[in-house]
Image (tube, rainbow, N blue to C red; front, side, top):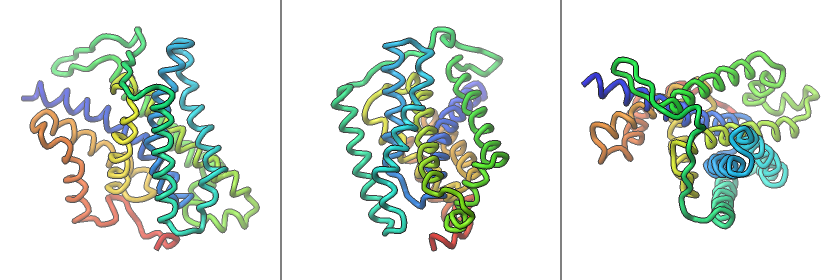
Length: 289
């Protein structure tokens, strides 16, 4: 039993940390911009497809530029489209970002086709590591370590850099940040780009684990929304805890009750919201209530 349980928990942590990267970007965008970005999964898919193309053209080192491209596209989208949503009815934002997600997915199908593309991990990360009852591929272990390092770096950035402090302050009172003389439009563009960058990184890391298909956008956005809901809107710690919970619960359900795996995270969300309607770390946010 323990020989089966431990590998599944580790696999669940890998999946959970990938979900966390997506959900943290979604949470950051909502926290400051007040926009629920339904196109976030499409940026995740773009990261995977850009990584695939860069790998096939220039080799593995070029893959690091894939999430940067996604972040730049996100910044352009904020300037051209998202900026028009500020201060307007939230439903307009939902409709626009949902349509944007569909548009990006259609463009992906046009550029890369509707079929799946296999994407192998780099050769130096091929193989399996076995340590007692623990059995994990080298690439999954690398994803686990990388995502943990990225989240730790993001936490330090938000807490110990001037721009990070502006983000945290702006998530509470964006108007006051603007009154202090800070170029708020530029900050908002940077925030949306940062959220898309995180989604792109998750897409790059997930590409060798998942088949790269246009539908992977939908496979990423729903867990991200579930995680943000469980953790509490705008909560960085909540997104991490909720992401790991969802990943582990999903992995264990796949192992012991595969027919219920698709519903496991929704059952978890319902159970937590019955006890904590605002999520695990949710607070009262006057600007949205």
